Length: 296
Image 1 (cartoon, one colour):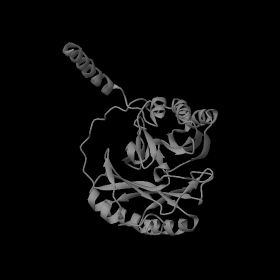
Image 2 (cartoon, helix red, strand yellow; image 1 turned 90 degrees about the vertical axis):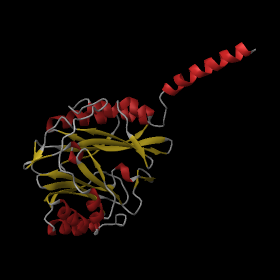
Image 3 (cartoon, rainbow, N blue to C red; image 1 turned 45 degrees about the vertical axis):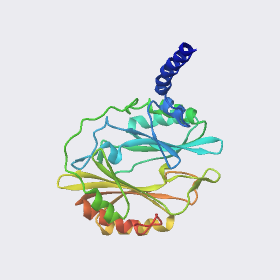
Image 4 (cartoon, rainbow, N blue to C red; image 1 turned 30 degrees about the vertical axis):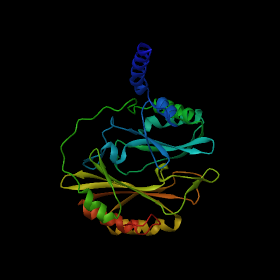
């Protein structure tokens, strides 16, 4: 009897490590497999990033890091018994039509094709998309579209770190009144709106679905550059534009990213180059003109 028990213990002991090695299946495992890389689930949204690390884009003399303005993304959220996806693709001009065609073939909707920046070299186009259905099938359609471009696919390789002056995250957070994060040489802020944003028959969109104001800073010389977009109601567009211009920030685009959201949203993109804190003060003035979650 003791020998039988000893054998059972050995079998169980061997089975535990084997089970531990099995990947944990999640609601988004099919998406990860189809896209070929993992995303991050937070606040009910599974978001996957595709940095265009293959591009070397400059505005004036400033070369942009991928995490500043050159990252394609796709955000998935449950919608009833299916899934919803929204996002945008960062593309060169020659990549737009092949990617657009593949998205359409895969059943995704094209909701916008436009610029976010001005004067960048080479020219960059942003293609916004939306889809509803089986999450893995949506992801497969996205992968087919990305395959029409030079976007690096597969598991991202760790990039060699380059020493550069650090921005004062604590001070920028204090000026803007919201907590930020620093990654890959860029300080970023995501600031949700106070009201619910609905889409597609009344589905409430999480802020990470692309309906939160985005502000990014990157060190440039002795100062910084900043870009991003404000998510606005119609009545807020002109006050925000005036606030940005009053503080020396450029307005680079005003347009829509979606086609059936409620309330109707407008996206005001900006660019600035100056001392980081000065830029942040101008952005705070514009932020105070919006219905975003109140600053701390």
